[in-house]
Structures are given as C-alpha cells and as structure tokens.
Length: 224
Image (cartoon, rainbow, N blue to C red; front, side):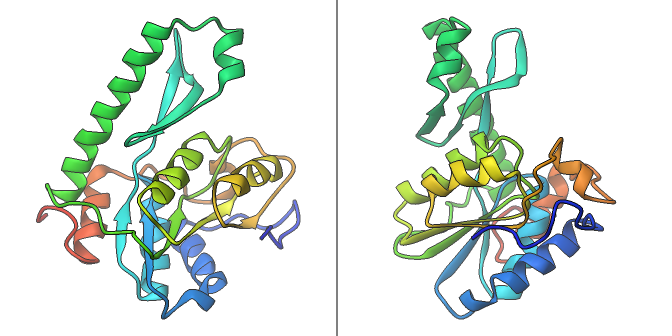
C-alpha cells in the first residue's frame, strides 16, 4: 500500500503523532495476533504508539548498517541476527576486500548483541511464529536496514510481515515491498533528502527511552 499524502504534505509534529496516524491506518489489524517491532532508536517511539493503538505487544528488531571502508556512512548492506543483506554491485564497484566485509559484519553483530542485552535485559525476543509482525521505523531513506529487519522477521516464522513507516521515498517502498507482505507509508514524497526533514521535532532518542518504552509495554527490558 502506498502513501496517500502528496509531496507537499505537512510534516509530522513528532514521532508520537506519526505513531498515532500509523495506528489509525493499521486499525483493521486490531484484535489479530499481532506483534509490533520497533527499529531502535527513533522507530521504537513510533512503534510504542502503534502497539498501544492495536493492543499488541512491543519488541525490537535491531538491524545494523554494514559500512564501507573509510566511509562508514556509506552502506554496503545491513545485518540483523543471522540475516545479511548486501549490495553486491556496490561491493564489487568499491573492490571491498572479503576479509574486511567479514570483520565489519561480525562487528555489527556484536553491537546488535550488546543492544539486545541492554534493551531486553537478557529476556528472549517475543515469539513471532505464525503471527502478524509489523516492523515500524520513524522513516526510511535507502531501506537497507529495513530490508534486513523484514527478512529477520520472516526468518523467525512470521505468518505475515508488514512494514509501517510515516515516510519513505517511492523507490525505497517499491524495493521493500519485495521483502514483506505489505508496505504502509503515510507519505511517499518524490523529493526526499532525509527522514528528519518530515518532522518538526526529530530529537535523538536515548537508549534509556527505548528501555522505558519496552518495560512499560510488557517488561521486555531491565527495570529503570
């Protein structure tokens, strides 16, 4: 499903408003066996509001970008658990060494493990088998980490995987539609520079806030 706002649609005031509007769009799933997964950190604030609207449990999925040599902001792909999504054409064009790639993937997996321990406090992730899983972020730019998150949910046995975001460019929506059953983006502007441009308030979300949201919606983290 593609967004129903035009390119000049008003920006979201904050992540809470974005989550409320997503929750309204997803209201037909209320009462189903749904799990909402937020992508930390900002995506968890949006996901928490969606989970409340649907009466669904909240958990996290933690994808990490695989950065290029000497330019970590350039993504060669992404990793989420055992799932690795790589841009083979970019890797070939940059002549990225296989040993570098292996080290970078392992480094990002260690960071995922660290964050999982922090956010969940040693608790296992929620069981996704046979359930409808809604993966939520505060927006999508290129879609690399979202693709890894969607494939991770599918690999864990989800019956249906939905990506729900407030805003994403049309080309990213088309690509990500191949990795899930449905994509819902409230806005799909063709002139897209960064997720933050679509919010009045796009303040950084600290780890402590992620833990607080998880604890308050099912105890998926340590006490705070």
